[in-house]
Image (tube, rainbow, N blue to C red; front, side, top):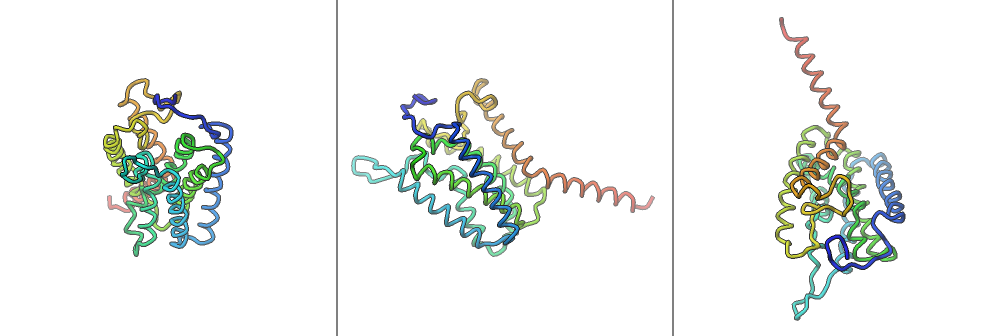
Length: 266
């Protein structure tokens, strides 16, 4: 039995196993390194976004072919609810497409502000809590490697967008990321409610903890406490990623205030 009381089979890739951590130790640093190299060599280029979009679409096609199942009673085929693109990682493909076709990407600063932490930290978190790779298949399956390739590509995209600077990152993008994250919590709860008939559904880990035994993200003190802890973790993560921008803009604001005081007539 798994943590939700659902019959489960043990597969070669166990969550938080040595193999799992070895994969993380390779894929996540590689994503950061490639983002640094490509941003330095090419700067911001929509060609890079199109390549990322193509890789992500191929990954999604593989996922569809792997998970699609017959509904029974002659009603055709469908994807299981847990594999629908309502989590932010698959949905980021649409956002990347919007950036790639945009004529003036600077006008999309609210979207960029939201995408940067979600791509960087959100996709990395998806690799750490890799239930899709753990529950359905094992280390030797193509779908396992597709899962990690897809998420590491998203991590690369987030870091690349930050380093290549399609816009001048400011504290306003930080505010947009917080507003987007809060909105996502509300939408995620709605999605979980809509698919509440399926006990495997836990979009964005909003209705129960990712796994048992976690020191901080657990349900010991009730769902509301858990949700507040999850939101605070998101706040800390977003703030950490934007910390250089926050420090720079805060220093600039303080400097302007001091200059204004020194130049004002007394």
